[in-house]
Length: 85
Image (cartoon, rainbow, N blue to C red):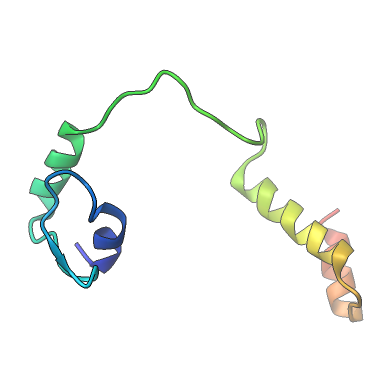
């Protein structure tokens, strides 16, 4: 497991101690995954800020908003932005 796992899981119960957050840490990925599964808590609720929208929809909406907020666009950018609508 790389340094990204250390950043995410370094405060996890039972996670091996890291060195400056990106060094050392987890050396045995299967053991870490089993430990993680053992400490997982099932939840009865899930929050979705934008029901009915996918990640692709959200990204397109962000690009549309940025186009609206843009002080100027070239012809190519304007055509790409209009294609989003």
